[in-house]
Length: 341
Ligand SMILES: NC(=O)c1ccc[n+]([C@@H]2O[C@H](COP(=O)([O-])OP(=O)(O)OC[C@H]3O[C@@H](n4cnc5c(N)ncnc54)[C@H](O)[C@@H]3O)[C@@H](O)[C@H]2O)c1
Image (cartoon, rainbow, N blue to C red):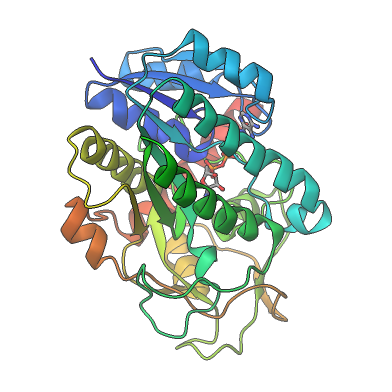
């Protein structure tokens, strides 16, 4: 049985990926410091898969603790590194906290891999590296644009750190550039747990519908898009999770074309904010209280993925549609409300 370390494995995308890895017969070890997730996620993973993943609570930004962890666990077949802070606004307010957490933890993980001859890394990157691309859909060869936030900057710098590291040792890596992951597991047992006010559209939609927030502000109604609202490539989190398993298999099977590969993970379809709201109202049966307000600084107008490379090289394709995404997100919000009672 191949053993995979999943850092940030109790988080949103990590927990879904753990379930998909277990489904494919991998043994999973999770490391997380629980800064943005909860321990009971392990119970819910176990309920879904029937297997409780091994877990260690650890701050990967701590070099000494991380080195000791890798010494205790040298026989790993691969690492999927999700652990990072991800709130764009918070990163603008406290850049050093983001550089420290996101870059130190990556460096410590790479060092642990190098020192213990662990060769395969899958890294969580983001479409934020493209900024507002000149050409759409955007493919992996598009130029990286100057980052609009410290968070985005940590993703660009992380890719560069990985690129130089793989040239210097036996570690190989795949960076997956996610577009906009939304939705939750069909069981409604795991999903996104936003701390504080959500930055992203979907948790804001579901929290407004359930009454946690009064009104959803749609930022910008005058963009150069079919209905004037911003366009993104929303992708179901389970599709994203499955891509990680495919990436791990590619590395374990030594099928990569180079030691550092980069793939877009999107559906290839751009959807406007209003299209997401319409789908949500249809699938949930809830009328959403929203208003269109001024554009938010730092938001790009439109971006969606060219997924040809991932489709052809990884043999992976996003399968779930928008209605499945919005309905599963709603069922997850209903479950969170149930737990709170
Ligand atoms: N969700 C998105 O929209 C999105 C989009 C693009 C990229 N990403 C990236 O994907 C990854 C996972 O995102 P997510 O949405 O699942 O976020 P999340 O916050 O739900 O999960 C991240 C997990 O990492 C843990 N963590 C953070 N810093 C840590 C540290 N120093 N040591 C140990 N654990 C630590 C947190 O407790 C959390 O459980 C992140 O790297 C994020 O930047 C997310």
